[in-house]
Length: 297
Image 1 (cartoon, rainbow, N blue to C red):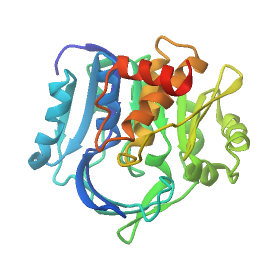
Image 2 (cartoon, rainbow, N blue to C red; image 1 turned 45 degrees about the horizontal axis):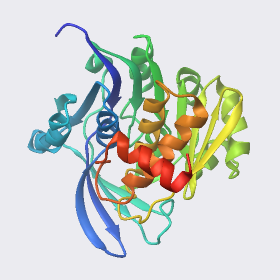
Image 3 (tube, rainbow, N blue to C red; image 1 turned 90 degrees about the vertical axis):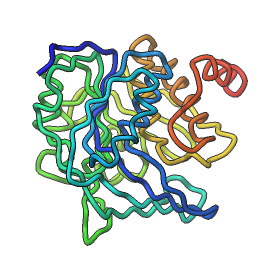
C-alpha cells in the first residue's frame, strides 16, 4: 500500500449511473455523492481525495474529477450502482427512485493510507458504507460527515424504499461530527416533519453539527444554535446532487469559516449548482459574487 497521503477533504461513496426523468425529458448522468462533493471541494481549491467503487467499464466517469486535480482511488466492482431518479413535479424533495444494479460494499482497508482533515461519507443505499468503515475513518483523526440517504434507503423489489430505523443507527449517529438529512429523511429518522424539532431529536444521539435541507434552503445546527440560509437558484435543471453538494460545500467552508458564514456559502454554491446539470462547475469568485448579489453578504 502506498505511503500516507494528506488532503483537506476526502469523499467515499459509489459512483452511480443515473437515469434522471423530469417533465422536460430523460437524460443519463454520471453521479454519486462522492463525485458531486469532490468536484465542489476542488472548485473551492481544496486538496481532495475520493474513494469509489464501480465497474471497470465506467472508470472514465471520474476523469473530469481527476482533471480538476483530485486523487481518485477507484476500486473495481462487477457492477456499477445504477439508479433511476424520477422527478414528477418541480419540488426537488418529491422524487421516485429505483435501482437496477449495485456495486460491492466498501471495506475498512479501502481508506488505508488516506489522511484528510474532513471526510464526507456519501453512500446511496444502506450497506454501501457500513459502520466499521465509518469508524475506520474516524480513527484517522478526521472530522466525519455522514449523509442520511445512505442509511435510510434500502432496496425492495427493485425500488429504493425508506426505513428510519436499523441496528447501527445509534452507533452511527454517535460517531459522526456532521450529519446531513433532507426533510423526508429527517422525518423518517425522528418522526417529526418540523426540521428544528427533528434536529433536537437527532441531537439526543450525540454532539454533532446538523445540515438539514428542504426545497427552499438549509438549516444548520452548530455551536448551540440554528443557522439558516435560503436556496436562490435561477433554475432547477441541475437539482440532482443538491444535497451532496450542500453537505460538501458546508463542510469545506467550515474548515475556515464559522457556521453562520458557512451556511450562506453552502446555500450560494448549491444554488449555482442547481442551475446546471452535473457537479458544481463555478469558482470561489462565482460564489462570492452570488453571496453579494443575491444574499447581500
